[in-house]
Length: 276
Image (tube, rainbow, N blue to C red):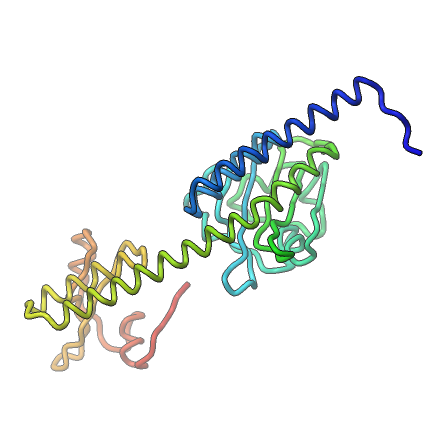
């Protein structure tokens, strides 16, 4: 038989439950108001930081191939690293949590854990306390939330329970936002292909056609630079025929021979070349 709790203990439990309900209500209110993935992720990070008083919060999502986790949002903005830091399944604490579908709690000296992986461009690597929780939906892991504190910290049971509840609560919202994002991109791709088709069948000058194609392709791919480079059969050189880059230095780039540079290799090998 469980021991009876005192009035102060009951009041504390009631406050914790009220806090949990308030946090979950705010999350539900937020994620039901938008399907924009980036907005959803940013709000999740904000709520987690407020609920845990964290010094850092990193949110990773599983890639489309489900073989690695990609940093998609953080408390301390890392604009140059968002989308670029990746962790393989089972790699580091984050990858281990995703693979094993269970949380990890380290109250101090987190970097001493044998599973810890350093990213030397992240100051959070030196923080003491660390909690990593899987984000799940329909019993499938879709991401991981990492909460960190600069100093050692004994995480309370109610804090950990709330963090796990948040991770479960937001899993479905993240998946819905990802599906919406994919649908939006596919719709943009179809619209771009339609416009390109119309452009090619029009009576426009070839220079106008090429310029429209690079502009629409850059928009579809979310790229800062997109170019069409044509082969001059007489000189065997490739020259920029159209680009939406505003850089005059880029526009004045010298021609390259077939086989030189990535573009030249693509022409020589007659195949696409992708450099992640």
